[in-house]
Image (cartoon, rainbow, N blue to C red):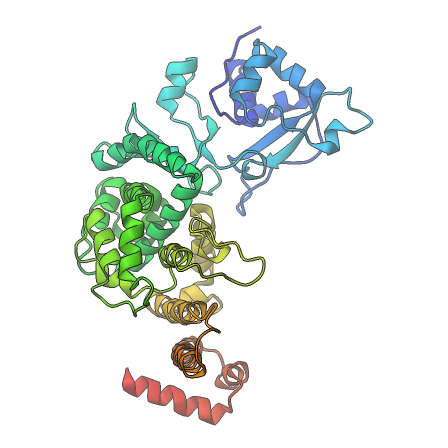
Length: 458
């Protein structure tokens, strides 16, 4: 019996694959030791997803422990999915048989990433692929200077080389200190990272139009082996998380500082609210902390970001403002619509757009990134105007009416602009004017005149 030791946080399916390789067998042949109730998830191209994991029943766990030549307690400590119960196999009439059920890693124990092969070889003597449960905030292999990539995406790379990007490695070394600060502040480290990641990932999308941004293009070209070249869009998807990691760490640390909450409070006008301008002190300070003194006005103009929600929650709490019944004001809560797209999701969209060949059947294939961003920006700013009306029904009639009408009219103007931009993009992409007019609830002739005026203003 050959002994195969598990890696910390390894997927059970990954360990089975390494056991099979140790015996000179295929993973599928070893999986026959268990009765499988389903099949592993596959990519659109047909290949099995690397983040496909298996959960076992009691009898099945015993089989794996014997196959590895280790005590079950070792597997319990190392494999997050080893003790996960699936009622469809644990409570079945055949519970005495060794059974397995395939599950997506994210549905079992969280995010999965490829392990560092050099570390795997050092630990086990096998320079094989391994897949581990590894949160995004812990993706740097400090020993070998590698960023470990998501295992759920349909792409061939397992890691990106960080040897020319010491600031990314340094950010990973700083993260434990940020996590300890979060705990002292009563915030889950995972929550702090998730919010900061969403904030900076939004900047990453906007940075295409920031003429002064020089850091991220340099990092991206290093990650791409020297030059992203004609595959820039692909590399912007695959290289995003390592490229922005230093800024994510800096933003998380900044937002956990009581001093930043104080800056946000004073910049808002305190108990006498004032409109945010390009010289907003909070945005300027955050720009300085990420090494971009010019970034403040860009952040001040972005009203729909998770960063804006964070500062809004901080300010409302100090003003003792309450939301609707059942509303839970949490600065660290990230809305579903603000969660950044995953690498796997973006690559699927990119592949679909490539297949459409710019025929106009795909929105992203026919509408420029600049147009899409402008529409999103207008909608987000309108939403922010409406959010600021929460709890406004107190004060004199004139004060309340003025506040309501000013914000509502501003929101309506922004929505009108978003409507014109969207309709223009749809018509330019080949959608019939009559159809677009029906969706806008306008006569076709009136919409045509509106679009003509919009083109003239542009």
